[in-house]
Length: 348
Ligand code: SF4
Image (tube, rainbow, N blue to C red; front, side, top):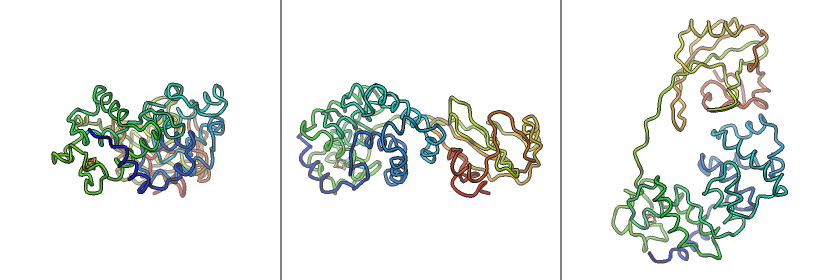
């Protein structure tokens, strides 16, 4: 393979998107943006990024942020364990590195929630260190460039592709090179059918020359997800909506949700379950069916709305007034069909 850096960088400087974290690419800004972009498209992530950085402008602010306020800032992005890990890492950064992310790949990699890719992105873009940052975009570009059928999910293929990325890296501009590869994967060498006609690497690309770029990269068939029924009780009292705190560990750990059971309850069973909590609810209309897809499972949601007197609640349950839902209690997107967190509540 001939060197790709020169045409790639020329294209990147002329075509890169103007993004908030590119205007001031500090290590903290790169870190926050990369964690958000692991789960969200760039255009959707920008408002979340701006809001997050305005509220928590540096690692010290992130380290000190109360848990619910932090989850509230992350609400809508999902994968809450990522922001929990960011806070753990920020506390270590404050304790061990004086509040600044270390300019050292191994030290970054050792922080909670920072993997090879994120450490590489921070180290190369913020600190100019010559380390690769290989994500799905970059693997796709390299599988096509080298017309390589290796399964990109295997560690051996990742190692090989990472070495190729490193071999092609210009040692004076590692950050721009890594960003350029990501940007090419996001804008031109996209999943499905790539825009080879617009690509600065077309003349070098073996996959394109072989007419099989759209067949690459090779990935294993996705595993089937388990479907789990969830019965929701959307109960209102004069003090607000009934919310339940999820367990401290596991899926959506520590977040707040309408009272819900991970099984398909009948109306009578739901009434009994509420009664056992000491809540004499009167159930009304059924909730429309909804679905939420997680990485490994699918929730099939349904249930009933209802009313109840504002009785005292057991531990882990609250009556949440509208303003508290908007400002205090982070409700995961999985319940978006029933609870609109930032406005009127409940949604129905
Ligand atoms: Fe991707 Fe096409 Fe460019 Fe090759 S020529 S890197 S397949 S966009």
